Image (cartoon, rainbow, N blue to C red; front, side, top):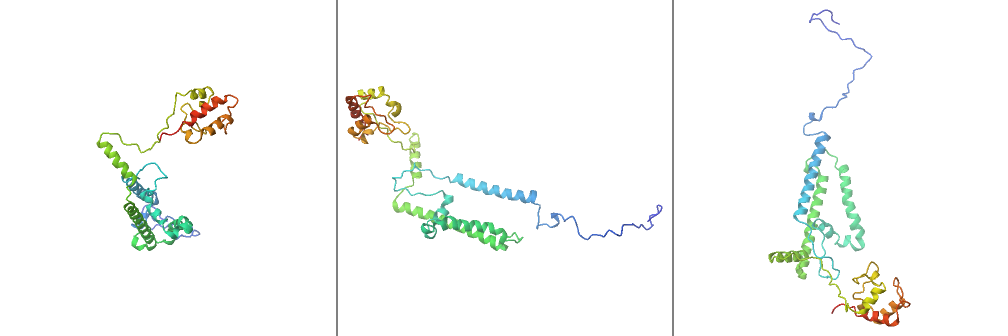
Length: 288
């Protein structure tokens, strides 16, 4: 303990001897004390991972915009020459499901087993590769999984595309989206509007529209169900082309006795009027 203002006096600090001096450091060193080995999660690590995700997403969007899925004509189940193909980013899975050991009797293995194995490897990778090393050549497990996945995707995609091109050459088929582009280009060069890709069926014309039978049907509210244009309503059949489906005798029986939602007209119309309506309906056929 010092007295006075003499700077040469010895200063003695008196403390409580019952309190032991701790040797444990309570405050850990800052991450800057380990350059190149550690970093703060927020914001450095989080920002870096977010930027990587943004770059990958933007790159994928650029690919999908630069190479959009080709659009063909509406589906036609009668077109046996059509070769179905998925979008380019699903070609590897499409090719995988062609192999016999992941299809047919082994379809469960192909649909659930192999994708489950791939996702399982991703889930187990952090537990199998626990090293702190960031260099890819010093992380054999993670690097091997990544390279195996990339090689598999690239190989299956190429095989699938080559097989598709081979089918086109063997059958002499031109893809629908190419035909559509050629027709649109020809129309543009001729100054015409682009042709519609929707193939609409030619409407069936009404035969003998001035026949008195049609007026008789209007008077008995037949068109309230079958529509004024005779194209029918929801659940009600159209009368255009009905002569191709039923004979005159069958139509007369339906008008007389009814059928399903169709009421009977035997008490409202005479036999001659029913015969007149059945005769007119039997003429409603598609033009040859």
